[in-house]
Amino acid sequence: MSDVDAIKRTRGQHGAAKPRPPGTLKAAVLQIVDAIGGCPKAGELTETTKGTWQRMTDPDGDNANVYPGVNKIRALEAHHVAQGGEPIVTRFMAAEVGYALIKIEPHTPKALQLLAGLAGGEMGDLMRAICDAFADDGQLSPSEAGRIVKEGHEVLGAVAAAIAVAMRVRDGGEA
Image 1: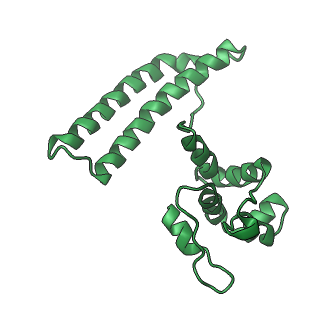
Image 2: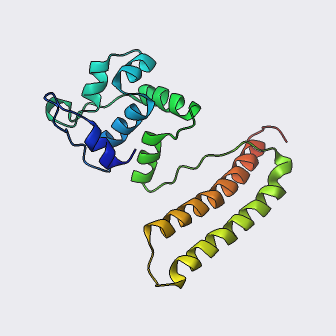
C-alpha cells in the first residue's frame, strides 16, 4: 500500500479521512498494520489492544509522539515477511538515514563464484535498463525508473549475498 493509500484508508472518529503525511514513520507504521490485517490483528500479534494500535497510528494530538516499540514492529514485520511481504517500517527507517534494505538469500561459500557471475550479469541488466531509459527521449519515466529499481535490487541482492557468505566464514561460520 502506498502512503497515499494509507492516508485514504484511515478513518477518524467520525468516519472522515485522518491523514498521515506521506513519507513519515506514522505512515509506515500504519502501512504495516494495514498489511497484516489492521489494528485488531496487530493487537493479537503483539499482545496489545486494537485501541493501543489505533493510538500508535494516530498522527494527531497526544498521540502524535506515540510509537510502537521495536519488539512490536519486529512481531508485525516477522508475520508480514512470513506471509511474503516486506519489512515496511524497517525499510522506511533504513531509507530515512540513507541506507537500502536488501533481502539476502542464504548461500554456501561454494556459491561465491556463482554469486560473482550473477552480480556481473545483473549489473549488465542494470546498465542496459539505464541506457534504454534515456535512449528515446532523454527523460526518465516512472516505468523506466521502476525497471532500474528492480534491476538495481537484483545487483545489490547478489552482491549482498556474496558479502554475507564471506562475513559468515570470516566470523567463524561454516566454510
